[in-house]
Length: 256
Image (cartoon, rainbow, N blue to C red):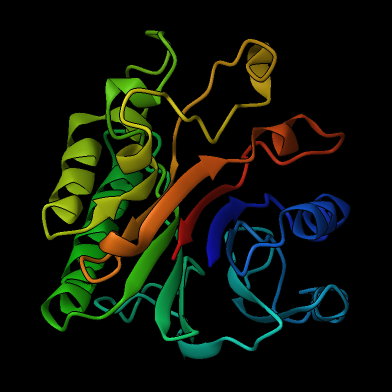
């Protein structure tokens, strides 16, 4: 089973790119982020023709998350992260597919920091931790897939000082990610590639794609009951180099 996460950065604008990748990679499950479309604008008929069932939670202009399943219909569990009934941003969706709980996470960026946006990022992380630990305690097979907007270590960002004040690499952001892992989750990409950067994001600015000036922001965390089934992990880098591409590339894992 191949499970992928892909920040599509506007699903309708990048739909041709998404469809090409789906045909080539044939992932069984896909977590999408940054749909940048309302629920009504989600291209479900085109996705269905491509052989995928879907559940989604959209938002006009910003955010938006979805889960696709090849030749299957994901069973929707929730469209919001528990813990704050006042938070209406479309950043979390959860579904069951083939006996596994899958999430699509679009964690807040947090910039500029310090400030209310960074506070929101850390509060969102705490809510995620509180929800995620339930899967651990109940021995549920789960994959927390998504764009976490965190480069967890120095290996996860190209050599530079230009991002030093950015929320993506702040000590508190990294500590929140490590606290999540400490519950028992396995960082699949890093587990299979302990010494390679494995970037998933290259900003459009300053020729960063051509320079391979990337960051690893997209992660697939697997619960302890699934970890022994992890066989492969990778990033489909070439997708980032296509015309009209998202600034992210799909990251993926394979479970036996």
